[in-house]
Image (tube, rainbow, N blue to C red; front, side):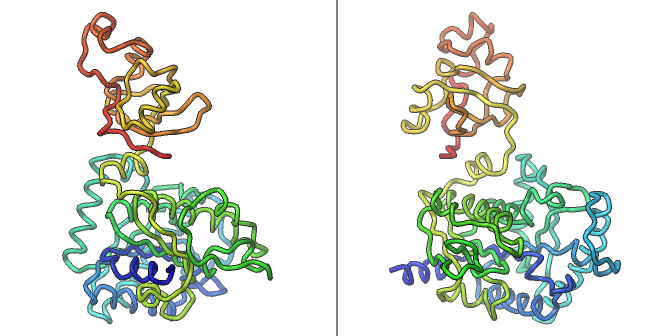
Length: 379
């Protein structure tokens, strides 16, 4: 059954995002492995030639820059790392472009920061640009803009794993393939004799997350945990993901052929709309609204809008139109949404019915604090 499911998932994916990490792109000395990169480019070109659309999310700029500058130890100073990334990004893209040219393909560099995916207008501009590049039969090569962003350099984005998840959701791609230097998710430390590869994950729950253990090579907790975070974004939005070993021969071709490689993570629930994907995964929250039990139940189970009568307290200062998180009294996040009122107004009307808004505020522009169309559940 799982083999048939894997074949169906891979056969029906017409838009694919492939993420490749630094350790796949480089050799044991930290230099760009041109043979492996050439193989990856050949496979990606074949995917595009088959009629599918493919986007590459690539790490490797810092490694390439260190190689170009003759460095053997990664600096810890952020400004130095940004300068190294600026040098390396040029080398990395020249390598990709030269190799794609051999297959008659054009590579397009797209550098992003978290701010561009947070702002709704920028988010749409990025989405439109990527979709247009795909229509032009170019292959976008996406990377975190390390020269202006410190997040990935300080490992917040897990070597572009989170970025790959965000790009997958932004495009509505049906499949994310994360290429790592391990074969997939194991039931324990990958090097342990009693650890087994997990072929298929139907639900990404605490039991699955508990499989992640520290590796003697230092590749365990941080690397795999960040990959599972990216996978959870994709499966929660109704799409599928595979974590596989990027050092395997023809790995992309074989995964898309439905071969039993790596770990397949199956979509959970309905496919989210583009609007709710942005709300849930890309937009940064500006404050918190704490709800009583009745409001929590109405939103999570009843599909209702948020009314002020169910608000217990607020945290932070935010404006009308900002994205805020909705939490229960224990602090657990339940949803995110666009607020119709700023924090000062909400402090005055919380716990009151909308019939009182006119008297309290002198106006009642909205009955709902957050309309259900502007809410995205995170549970």
